[in-house]
Image 1 (cartoon, one colour):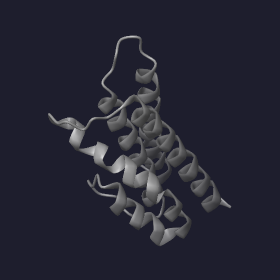
Image 2: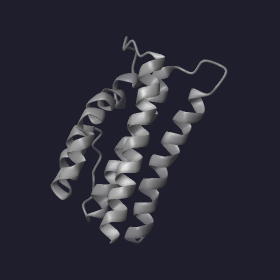
Image 3: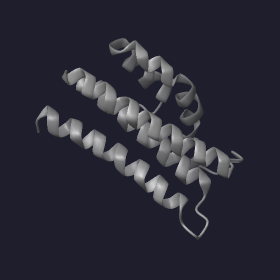
Image 4: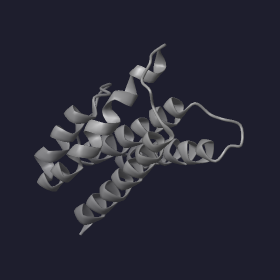
Length: 132
């Protein structure tokens, strides 16, 4: 499969995770907020990996957003503006998979969705900037 196809797959998966989180947040039956936060973390992870992949680097099976962000910053220092969002989303990549007491609130879930959208917009703009 060619590079453009693989890049599109990374972006599509990030999009799917974000849209799923948004959809679940509108359900009338309560959906656990930690599942929505997990999907937001996953979306951010896939968008960061798409950016890394666009630079001919295999992103690997890493889930730590801070480490992925550091790699992105090697190619574009403006990614540092996402640090606060990555710190917020990072714990949702693993912890919600297991019994825990995260104490995630509806406000946390709403912030996670917004931050995932911000990452999506940022990465898409960065990728577009790479085309120019």
